[in-house]
Amino acid sequence: MFFHRSELGIIAWHIFRHIPNYVVAGFAKRLSRMLLLAPLDAQEPVLGLIRNLMTRHPNVACLIHRDVPETLVSDPYDENEPCLSKCNALNSSLWEIKSLQKHWHPNVAKRANFVDKKLQQVESFVRFRCQDELFSNMMAKPFGSKEGSMEEKYSRAQVCLLPISS
Image 1 (cartoon, rainbow, N blue to C red):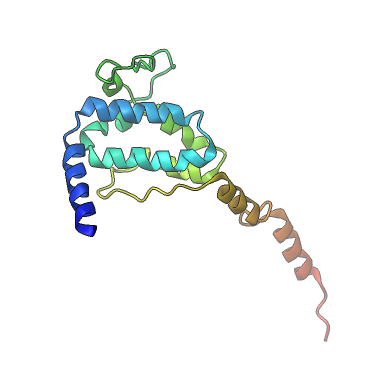
Image 2 (image 1 turned 180 degrees about the vertical axis):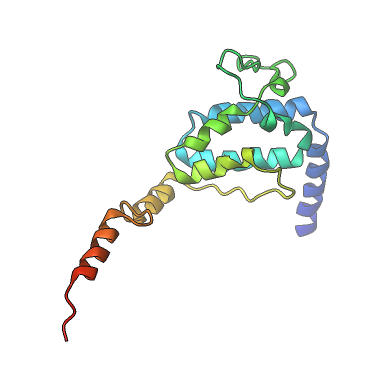
């Protein structure tokens, strides 16, 4: 069974290596456009998937390093075009991911930082988490848990002001 799966993996690897660049670019662009409206539990894994696409297909990395269009209208990508060869994704950029760097959730913003870094050599692990797990993780953190929160500073100041008894 293991050898059968590994054989399928090798076959899939060869197939995916020979996909035309316009197909990969169109797929990555559509995924990044959908990220703008995607639920939180889908954003981190899809960002990882796009990052892995750029790793596996370095010829499409031009989408990351291209200048961001001034307006949505000036983006050459046609999202209404069903054919990936005609949607003009290779002439566009992944500005959607750049905008996710300002996301309210720190994990999504951090995951979107790959567009500012050098292209990785090895694909990263893509982890899917459900909304319940994300919510539990957020609720487990104390409110205002940033370093040096006001409560911590106040507590430390009170301890320092206490008289030392002899």
